[in-house]
Length: 343
Image 1 (cartoon, rainbow, N blue to C red):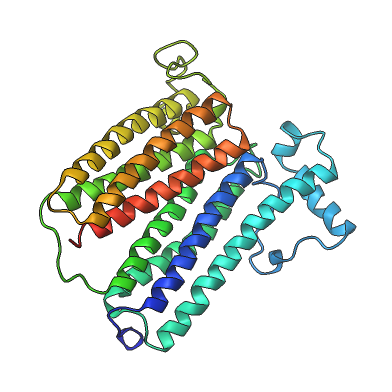
Image 2: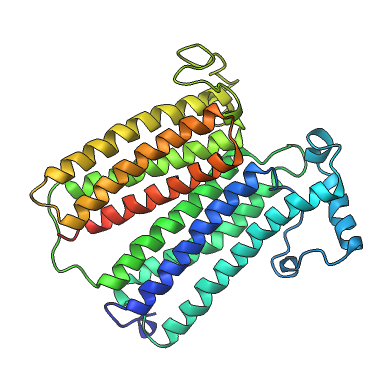
């Protein structure tokens, strides 16, 4: 492997990784739109190559629609759907999968080019391996998620949606970190003390909140308890407990919404406190202080969007904005954790 890796830093590699990160961010937004429009199960087959082409004629559209009419979602959720309505949701899902194919090409082709030219920073070998693994896992897990909604469910399994979104965010974070590493070169000076650990804990807390949000989305839990800060006038949701531990943790609408709210409160306090403390620090660089403040402000904005989305019963525009700001806050938290290791 070392024969393909030599340089300490590469501005071209960094720019390429930022472009890939932007595509992942777009994937997250389009994926959220696909879910919010109820489009995720409109394509019932996984054809990585031939599926790149959409239906080209009426016969193809009728065949796709017939396959959709055979799954439970059509029978129990959309029994009166017309072909025109089906085409609307189909294009959302097709766009999501097309963007995934584009992402794969934009990542793999330049990766091979940079490797053959020995322009990849050698110290980042394991990070590039992790990127390849995450990128390869995402479509496989995506189909595993879709398959859960094709036979016995009317929506995908919430825990599979959580894993799918979790991999996307992990890929986004890894790309941000590696792009910063590739552009800056090896650190010449690092900051000792607790700041590095605090920054990583903040990344972990944002990531946990993203996973909990995926469970809310997967359980359609944003459509219940649409008041705040109470739950239908109560301090706690009345249907918190499910028939078992996992059923409560991953499938109870009341439980997943409560957990998402509680971690949101904790995250706002932690992010704002860390941002305020960073501004007063004599040890952090100015970029680190700005990043810490930015994370705090984005987390606060995200909490406000979350409340507005809940009160509005998850309108598509607010739902997409909520997911976008989550991705931006996570990216900024990762950048802070990276930056804080370089005074």
